[in-house]
Amino acid sequence: MKTAVIAVGGNAILRPGDALTPENQMKHVKTTSRGLADLIQRGYDIVITHGNGPQVGNMLLRAEIARNEVPLNALDVCVAESQGQIGYMLQQALSSEFVERGMNKIAVSIITQVVVSETDPAFTNPSKPIGRFYPEEEAKVLESEKGWKMILDRRKRGWRRVVPSPEPVEIVESAPVGRLVFGGEDQAEVVIACGGGGIPVIRKGGRYIGVEAVVDKDLAAALLANRIRERLFVIATDVENVCIDFGKPTQRPLANTTLSEIKAFYDEDQFPSGTMGPKILAAIRFLEGGGEEVVITATEKLVDALEHGAGTHIYRDDNSR
Image (tube, rainbow, N blue to C red; front, side, top):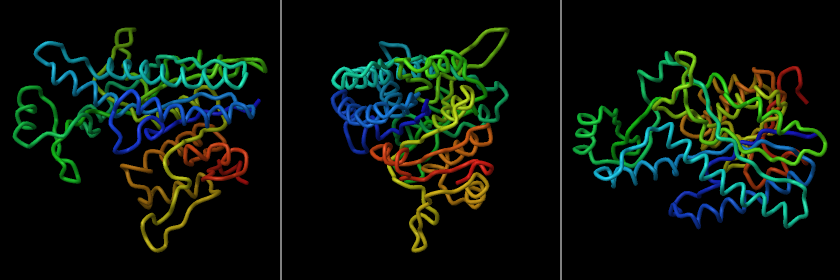
């Protein structure tokens, strides 16, 4: 049985410059779902994870506009809402593909909680930008009135709120995800889980409690893949290959590499923290956690990557090809 965890990036749901309308999002989700269905039709049983940045940002903006009428939801609730919203779109588009192709498959979404540590340093050093840009004067007021930490965007577009982005340490619903994806030869479920990095929770007094934070979606997807003992982790993004010396005359794409080689490149700061860096870190975590292979490629190249070797393939050192 061929299985994989596939982390689809934000461009699978919304392209840069597109308005955040339901129509635009569904258009891109349908395109992404066709590519995923192609893969499933070739015999892969998959778990799909996804981002949620623009959607959560939109929820926060709506709440801010209506702040005198509607209470502001905490971030964990916003992540849960976005999991439902994007999960619905993926379910509808994928299940429609399955019906049209006569496939005995059905997409199911699992609202997924991710445990983080209450003592994670991220809680005292918020760093993840969320929401809209503010002029400096308004940002100072928000810092004073709401206790938000605000930073100036590196491209000087304005000030933004930053929130903690703690490390994921456990996936609460990993066992049911594993049972669904490894259900056997005739299993029909295509699982959507860990959307937006998962709903951040801590364990306290024998209970799970939601916290004001966001978890990196690629790190959460890598942890989920490890917890269900998946061997293959695929990161679908907007470029066909990972590149070394990106943007320089010496730029070159990576086709096949190993964990030790990619760690050396990572330690040389070859991968910017705002783009490829988190994806490479997630790849390293997955392989160090027992995984065998990571594929990073463009969303439209998934079949070519898994069937014909396109994209960047990173192997555990004892499993290199």
